[in-house]
Image (cartoon, rainbow, N blue to C red; front, side, top):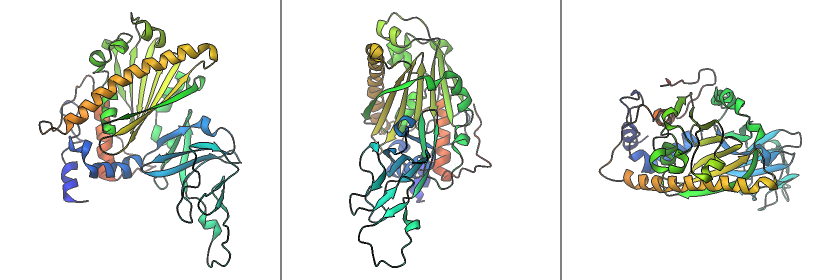
Amino acid sequence: MDQRLVSILALYDETAPLNEARTIPAPWYFDPAIAKLEEQHVFGGNWQVVGRTGQVANPGDYFTAELASEPILVVRGADGQLRAFYNVCRHHAAAVATAPYGHAQSFRCPYHGWNYGLDGSLKGMPEFAGVCNFDRAANGLVPIAVDAWESFVFVNLAPNPAPLGNFLGDLVSRVTPLGLGNLHFHSRREYTLNCNWKVYVDNYLDGGYHVPHLHKGLNSVLDYAHYTIENGERYCLQSSPMVASEDAQIAATRTGDRAWYFWLYPNFMINIYDGVMDTNLVVSHGVDKCRVIFDFYFSDISSGREEHNRASIATSDKVQDEDVAICESVQKGLASRSYGAGRLSVRRETGEHLFHRLLARDLRSGNEFDAKEPFRLAVR
């Protein structure tokens, strides 16, 4: 690691308690060397959501994705087993699956016709007679660790990673009572923001600090005074009692006794109201751009409920538009010579503090996660 990068990493003190802590420093949001480390050790070294189990419900169903600049193929095998591979032909490196999703009996590379089974094994190579010392069995698609939890498909690019269950920890028991299995996928929307991915995550994790100021409609249904923040090892749960609102649109689409906002390190969010859920996946696209993928779920996706569901998505759009504007403003401010790092609210920003410490650990250690002895951060 070059000395300049060492110096940038040293600007943050991950050992500082919340009441003395500062945010990660401004260069972490726009330095290309930090972005490269994140690709290798944050996105490339942790369990990451790449899709939904509904996309691979039946044998032969598949979808493609990209993670840490790597092309990924996820498929349900003929034996019902969920598998993931690098979407890279072993011959001359073309993608073997070129559609974003579909159904296949096998995968034939469009470049030279090499054919792979749903289990990744190499089945055939046209006009390859006479090639010496070639082991077909050793030239199948390269596998990737894959698993599922609730309706989410995760992959991990690290060699021999600890099981997904270890990574999720007690998040599983916190989510189970909320009945995510009763919610059905409706639609997806994607947004591109001119800011670093961490700016968006910071905004999500500020414990509702910005809600009364930025999201007047959303704030009208949340009991802000009783908004709670709880940290696990790799997740944060923000939650608030719901109250009656005079805003007709949000009162009709954000109902129930309580709102639940889960963040899973590093970039996945689950937002739950009564009969409504949306998930947010924040994908880095360089130092000053990110893409946020929203998947919307409802308890009832019948045609008779469509108008209500679309109104609910419109409510989400309004909140997202407000977040886009402030996140892009923050990105500009981070580059100012007047800013270095900020302080954190002890009452509101404990989730952000957890995020920054986990990030620092990954960037400094290369994410050496031991299945027998996973590191534990003190929960504050």
